[in-house]
Length: 123
Figure 1 (cartoon, one colour):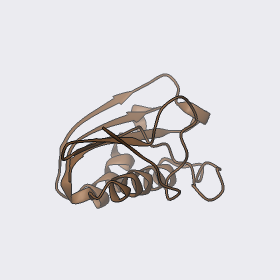
Figure 2: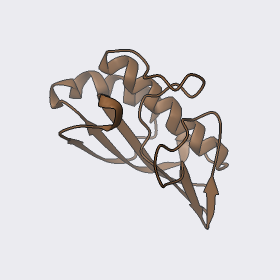
Figure 3: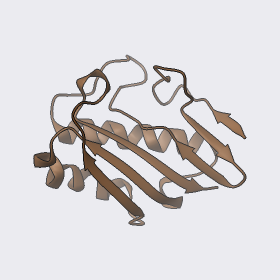
């Protein structure tokens, strides 16, 4: 196993890594909409936050030698299912291969953000 570490995605805020490589597979940790350069949450809307979360997933995958086109499965967490349609509008711009997906509403997310996205891809 190999840990993924990149300055192009937010640093882990707990006892975990940004992602792990195992064989030819990469598993990203959940990416919240934090701007890596500033450590601040990106915007107040679900569209702004979904955009940043997807960019962060892309950065982790790229650091592992993979890409968004190689994603097999995602798990998405929303603070409010009322944001589902808007979230999907952003999500589909990034995950063009239409990987398998689970999307669930959760009570709260770190830093009070509106969404979090994790992915499994091949290298």
